[in-house]
Image 1: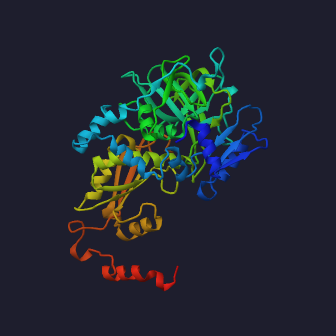
Image 2: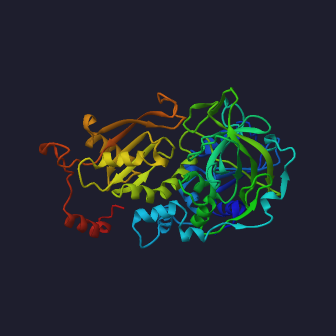
Image 3: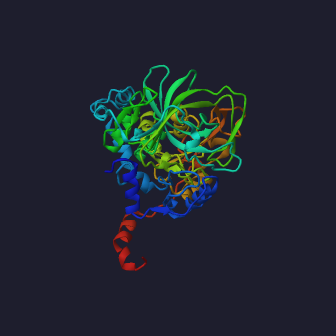
Length: 474
């Protein structure tokens, strides 16, 4: 267990997965070019700590989430599957699964309550502050692409007060800077609907697991900081904001306080997304009006690599995937596993394996997933059998090529899509497709069309296993 981002950096360095860049570099595209080449190295490349930034006193850390191994270390676990097990612990024992999940969703989990954040009076995240004349230009925001309207922060934690309940919520978001005091949210996660001025805070560089939990954006009534504490097995300490009434994690490197409100200026801004295409932010966006900046005495600026696949953000999606799995299984118990970032990319595809027992079950699973708030924007769902490894893309391709009849096994529907999808016929609305790549049962095909994959006798396979070492093959 480590405490905060500085100790996580030390852990990466101790394990040989951090490279310190001591030469002067520019935040104007140069760091972006270095980062995009790094993340294509084997195992996602090392984390990078740029110590000398032209025009800034603050060092910059990127690619800290660049591999599944690193994201597991962020939670102090050996493998990401343990995150699924931790979420399952929160479902109240002795009750039906559905009721247990309902109690978790509505904040009645006694396990979660043990990790309610502890209030303190002063914190390292407020050692240095600017409340009278804060400016985004004081901070080392990066320019990631040539045609971006301005510099940006690609992924950080967003805390805000829910306008209906008044409760504090936590999601992740990006920021595109407009001027000294105004920015636009970029691809915020969750159902973030802002209709009036709402207090908010951007948290940069707290414990690395915090961003991963915020990125999952589970539709809960619980305190997001309590959930994050439970997932990392340590209570957060919090302090009240300098200008907003929100609870701020005390170990943050930087905190940007301000107000969210609808962006009403009739001016289009452009930013390249992780899809590799540019997106225009206009009157439908949400703005963030800066009111205060605070940070540690020697802070570290932390960002996530913005690039075409493979992406650092894919590892955050892996956490979302593992945390969502218990909810997915509650809606469709036949689901065995899901993969929401095939090819290490966020691309609107879900690979799903199921234990199939009746005709039409794959289509039933597709509708169930599209009906979930967190997964409703999936553009493609591919359903395979339980024995198919969702990370073996050759096996997935074999299943699609050999078990799909295009007229029978494609399900095309209209529904919600990401507002950043450039090819939907309306913003946020378009067609999506499900592909049934499972083996077909009687009732789905004619009797003479039933297919069976040839298998060797079990006793023979067992005999080969026992004699394998004697063959000297490997």
